[in-house]
Every structure is written in C-alpha cells, then in structure tokens.
Amino acid sequence: MLTPIIILTLLSSPLLIALIYSKVNDHELDVNKYASWGLGVAFIFFSIGHIAKTQGMVDMLPTWLPSRFALVYATGLLELLIGIALFTPKFQRQAAKLAIAVFIVFFPANIYAALNYTGLGGHQWGPIYLAIRAPLQLILITWAYFLCVKNRINN
Image (tube, rainbow, N blue to C red):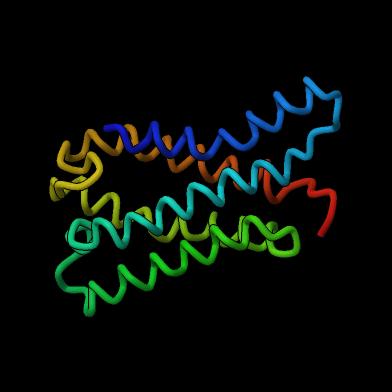
C-alpha cells in the first residue's frame, strides 16, 4: 500500500521545496507553477507504471475490452504527454484539465480491479482498497483544479 504515499510525495514535493525556498530567500511563490510540476511528476510516475507493470495494468481492465495491451500502452503515453505538458507553462492549464478528465475516466478501471481483487497496487485488497483509492483520486482532482487550473496568473 506504498503507492498512494509515493504518489502524494511526488505530487507535493516540488511545491513544498519551492515554498521552503521562497521563505528562506524571501521570494514570491508561484503556486501554479510548482503545483503543476508536482502533478507532472506524478503523471510521469503513472506512465512508468504502464510500462513497468504492463500485465498488472492489463489485468485491471475487463477481459471484454479489445486490445488491452495497446490500451495500456496508449494510456501510458497519454499520461507521459500530460506529465511533460505540466512542466510547460503554455500548456499547464490545459494539461491539468486533461489530468482531471483522466482521473475521472480511468477511475472505473480502479473499481473493476478492486472488485476483482487484481494483484496490483493494492487492488488485491478488494473493495476495501477503494476506501483509499477514492479519496486519493479526490485529492488529485482537487489539487489539479484548485492549484493548477483555477486562478492561474497566466494563460
């Protein structure tokens, strides 16, 4: 059950480091920028999971879906592109909006995996895992919306 802790650490670290740096050096903190970077790091982590744990990701999908391996690779590529875009000021807001959509669209795969006790990332715990995963998804969506989309200074 280490994955949610890793995700939250990756998500918050750039903003936390920037906050400390801004306080020590008396600089203004660009919350949007560093929150987007954290979300970008998290999305790159997600994309790596699609490559490193491909079979586990395939197992998270219903067997009736065609081309499950291709779907896993395609979604991993999408997550990588979102992650990279979150580091590019011009695309941060749009990437954060797409990240929110991905969290919503991909969540049924987490429900399916938990209900079928898939052995990846805590899903083997069954439906109880959703008690951790659902709040994590809400945290990620809230982070993306309030820190990366809403009240952007530029764009």
